[in-house]
Length: 470
Image (cartoon, rainbow, N blue to C red):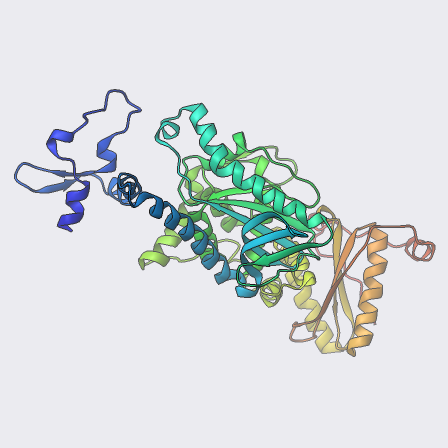
């Protein structure tokens, strides 16, 4: 402890020698432990010590010409290794690929630092270890833009180049460990730039400076630091929930004003990040993340308290909806991912209505032996969901469910439709699949659906419309 304090305290003769204006580097911030003439050490505030412990070693290393190059290499390697370690803890080793080289024939198009595949979704993580320079931290706009370009824009452009390669035929993906990820079924890609260092107001910088390109394949980018990845992988218990948050954050990024990425994630844990269409902009204060901050303190420091904020992870976990999500949230099958994301985007009131209806259907089917079903249109995803409850033989149950799905998909003019078969009494999932194809005119289906009653919207119905079939 004595050696540590000697490194960070300010000697009397060094105090504020170069401090001439308010935005100059303040030595007290970098070395907040003060030494009195009698040798006693004093710390006026605890937070500056924590900040200095994190921040100061970088500058110590930069003063060592012999070691600085090695320190920079180690910093970059740590950033990638920690990122991969945290993502693997959620998605598993089979879904996480590191240092993926992309080849078109013999030509190397680029490298992905970390690639995560789950269902029809891919997340391309590009890790950078550059820090903001002191002029940028002082608010010098041109220098701030330069640092952002060097650290974030470069990483994003690299991710987009790698994402665009998936459009071409014959592209090969090869990891340094010999694995070859298969991206042939990927329909959506999200570029994610991860910085090793905490950038002040990073979310606002990304909103102001990032030059992004999005289309049907490449979604909006997420720019964050390594600390956010650590927190998300700590708080979210499954690949499905992690992916759901990434999709929602990308979808509503332009509507949400925040100074740092912990704020929207804290909001998401409270009530889901879905932003209603009638809202053009939502400003979230830093205090929104207080429950998240408290939960992380409980988990990491062992202090008493709630280790999970009250919200999406607690309120619905014991409902029928929650049990269905739990049953499929680790399954990379495209059906499980698609229906899981659809369910996770629903509001709490809708979820409770669905859960109540399903509980009644499962109970009735177990008691009477009759077929029960529930159909839900989901307009904002151009899709719908049909749930059957019966104990028919697998092939018969499959054929009946598929026929019902095709009927409802056509009637709703939807692009895709999900189907789920549950066991009577227990409510456990038996069969699940999706039908996905653009809507085209079919004279036979047109005739059969001409007089079908329109389904009520999920947000407005008091109880979901069910079609009881025997």
